[in-house]
Length: 551
Image 1 (cartoon, rainbow, N blue to C red):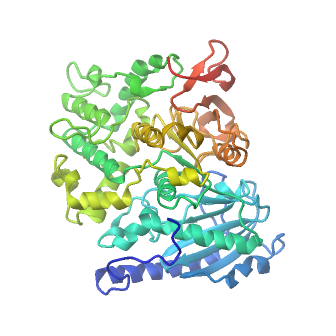
Image 2: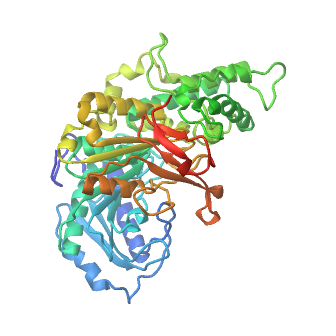
Image 3: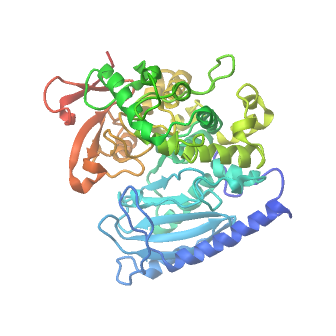
């Protein structure tokens, strides 16, 4: 499975004339323009977890001079060009590093950040949505890792799938191929720059970035020694089916934004006590038997109640898609902490689920990856027939990452840490629980030697939410930069020393701002364990909880 960078496609040539050829040339030109632009503005700033790109001139008095950084231009890699290499000034959040930009096969744009104070290890940052941009690499650089990332072979917004229309090579690049090629090239750049091999290789990604990590260990199991994937896509086709299911349910009865607080309040009242502690957080929401009918309006429609149609729509969202005979196609969302519904599920509440991210993604996916631009998911997707179509299955074979046989990755000595949020309303945590069970069943008793799952109460999609949502995952800061509070440090110790994480202490900052101080800490426990209150002390202090199997 360790393919060389010279992997080839079987099928239509990348250079074939016509619409696809024009699209490829356009992406090539955009890539060179992008490289030229970022070459003129090489610096990246931001927090260790998230931020935005800003520009700054390279410094001349860095401990790594420009000539040392530019030596990567002498490196010869298959089908790869280095477009820029500059020294980036240290900031309060990010140490000094050499920033290398390049392209593979002209269309796969990548970046490698080489810190002056290197810890001897390689790190890859997964990208979100439909990718199309190189993610920020400061999360890894701040920890001392040589860090890489890519746009997966096309440019565009995270919710834009138009590049995939009639372009199977680009779809394969996005699915897994581009990432592997960049990993191979980036490791060569690291070895050339430091004149030594990396000691270890680690992955961190959330959402689609988590799926990218799964693709790596399933298809290229020797690329990484340790992988952290969070709130991750497993079955792209199944997830998009769920999004279309919700969009159809809401097309019949949209739920306005002003009704979301009533839903959130009702589920909290019903589900919070059921986890054994009334603390404003819902842990193990899959155990809560919440009935949306309790929100039904007794008389006229009002902001604090749901119409009969809205009750049915919410029931469908919780239940997940089924066939007309009741066969389950994909899990729904467990009840609780629905305050993020407008962004991920219900949209404005006036037209189906528009413009929630789920509406955009399913619309783009079915039209540009699968059935063509004229396809209308709301009227043409048939839950009885569409999942069985050959085209659906062919796309699933490329885009889905559901293989539970990770024996090659385990044999390589790899360690896998998965995490999710119980309050994720973009990607259901119930599917992650299923996949975790599939791996354990497939791999047998030895699965505990390389696999852990942590599920955080009150964590929305990757970031934010009312619960303890910061523990070093993608997009996170951390309370303390150590193995107890940082999930990447915990992975590193597991790989290096063989010490599996028994818990990760997560923090909730006041107003989600680290500068305002800590509001709450809570241990995240290896599933199926959960944090149980000892019976005394503050419920906002992790020290007053133990990890134990649920009662």
